[in-house]
Image (cartoon, rainbow, N blue to C red; front, side, top):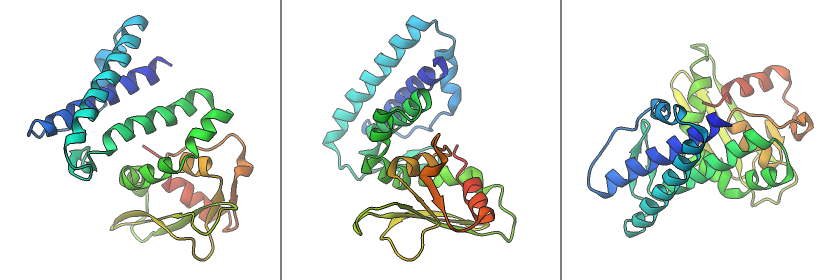
Length: 222
């Protein structure tokens, strides 16, 4: 639990620092996870206080960001994120790591299943989510997959992803053709983040164990 609290406090601090600098007309590099070291050194009471303080600070910066266009791009960890995504990213971190703590209890599944969780995972975090798995591809290897939510209406989007030696791609697309994996909405978000639900029957595949294994290897998360 301490690791999760330190991680979340560090996330809030860095999101506020980078977005705050942008609002001040400055550009700063995103720090790595060494930002968590001072937090991990705190006692429990100070660590919890730090989490509340960092979250409040991020909230203040996010409110100030309402004055700038929501689709403005800000440099973040080797890519860019929209201004509006900064607070949303913190929210996603809280939902995801909440599942890490509680597992597949009902409230956690409900939060994971909200459509914005999928949209943010694909549009804001998709590229780094595929980067780790893509590094293990053979020079001539290419992986393509279409992740679909079972039993949804035609308006529901698939998550379509690919990776080869030239790079990775991930996008939302209308359901077309056969799906590589069919899941529920919450399980699909977990898969994108390199996690799996406790009940394996929530993931259905008809492409065979070899293709399934390759897709899971690509979706290994950070």
